[in-house]
Structures are given as structure tokens and as C-alpha cells.
Length: 198
Image (cartoon, rainbow, N blue to C red; front, side, top):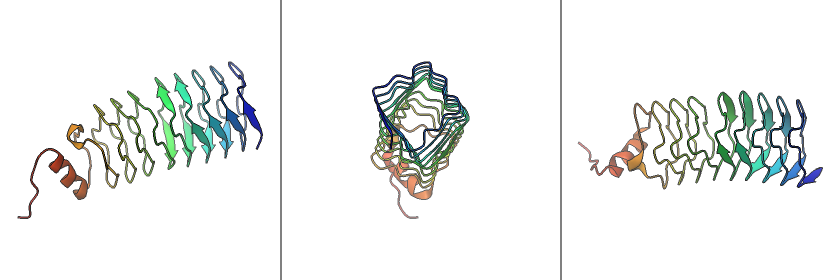
């Protein structure tokens, strides 16, 4: 696997670049045009994608570990079985976005607009989703264990089958949110209700 360390690609035109099986550590892609680029099995570790355009890019089984996405545009991008552990998204464009599984544990998505996204089966353990807007999002069978959901908007979201271990259920904002019976029992208990058989 070709490896690049501490290199700068700031402002470069990498339109349509293929990053298959490459490794980038501590590299900068600030304001870089990465539109319709592709990656398969690539690793980006502690890289800075601030201001980069990743529009319509396609990534399969690639890893973005502890990367920074500030003002980054992922409009129309596809992420299949990708690992984004520890990455931080700030004022990033994340819609529309196609996600198929993957590990997003410890990701920071504070205040992110995630309305309508399908995040089914995505691992979001320990993720910071504080004040994020997940209106109409699909989180079926996702892992939200110990995720921070303070002031997160979950109106009309689908949480059926999602793991909610360690989540402060009493502070969830559930407006027409779809949950399963087991989750309903947990939410009721978190609000002090006693659930007993008839």
C-alpha cells in the first residue's frame, strides 16, 4: 500500500482521482477538489479535509480516522462499509448522502443537518450527535450505545432495533419518532413510569 505522510494537497485539482489501497497520514486536503473521486480500501488518518469538495465521490471499505471535515461538502457522496472513527464534522454538507453500514463510532456530528438520511446498521457508539437534526432519518438496527443525544432532533425518525445502551433516554426529543416495544418500555422507565401487565 503506497503511503503518504504529512503531505499537503491544499487547493489541488484531484477531480476524479482514484485513491484505491493508498494510505495518507497527517496529510492536508484543504480546499481541494475531490469531486467524483473514488477510494476502495484506502486509509486517511488524521487528515484535514477542511473546505474540500467530495461531491459525488464513492468510497468503499475505506477508513477516515480522526479526520477533520470543516465546511467540507459531501453532497451526493456514497460511503459503503467505511470507518470514520473519531472524525469531526463541522458545518459540513452531508445531504444528500448514501450510507451503507460502517463504523462511525466516536464521530462528532454536533449541530449537523442529517435530515432524512438512512443510517441503518451504522455503528454510532459514543458518537456526539448533540443538537444534530435527524428529522425523518432512518436509524434502524444502528448502534447508538453511549451516544450523546442532548437536544438532538429525532422527529419522525425511525429508531426500531437501534441499540440505546447508555443513552440518556429521558432527554430524547421524540416527536412522532418510531420506536419498537422494547424501546418504548425503556423510554417509559426513563421518564419514571411503571410498566406493569394489565
